[in-house]
Image (cartoon, rainbow, N blue to C red; front, top):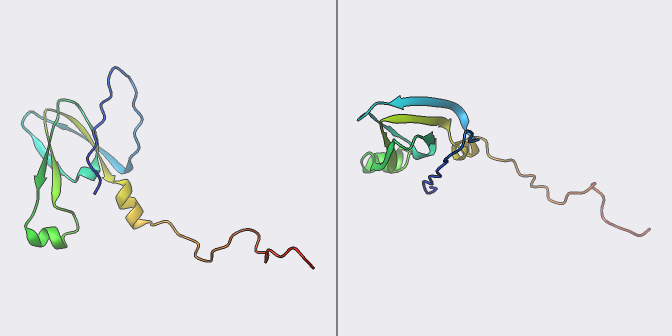
Length: 113
């Protein structure tokens, strides 16, 4: 997978984010936590703490298709999650590749008579 990267936004009024699927906003109370797929995290307030947890047993890790780690977000603070990460979107809708090769106008490339 991809490393979990956190970028801090300070002293600004606007931040533009890209999300896939449905964006879910949840306010966590002090001591409340939620376990999510790290790819689902869009953003969170600085008061939220982040921890990585191993999930499942060996059968779930090998056959579950969800990986070995999930991310625990603990309040207080607001979090925003996305229902589909860009990686999941790419797996569902892979780009089509024209395998015929070539290109151009379909001519044979000859220049003589």
